[in-house]
Image (cartoon, rainbow, N blue to C red; front, side):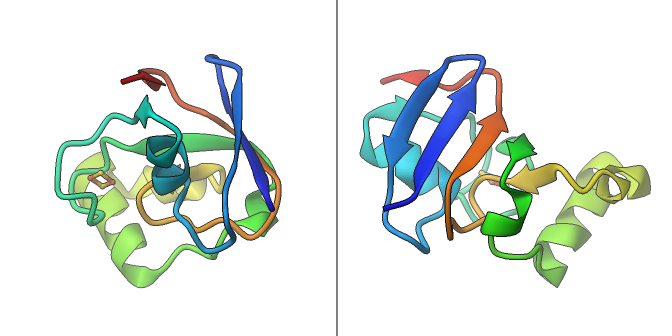
Length: 103
Ligand code: FES
């Protein structure tokens, strides 16, 4: 199973392929910052992908459009910025997100 680590918390979890990053951590009892119904609207779940960007599903039009709407057009110039509620796991990944903590 793929392994996903979140910094700066330094926690690593295993998750089945095709789960979102957020689902993977919530399934293991961690809170991930959200501001919508986990549907890509708010972008509060945005994370920086430190390694393994190619082991996440590619960014779709909906995710891209909401990043531009909420954070401006320059936000999508950074290929490491992804929404944790939209990016699905296909292999080992390390991400950075402040505010992730045990429930
Ligand atoms: S939780 Fe709102 S965009 Fe991901």
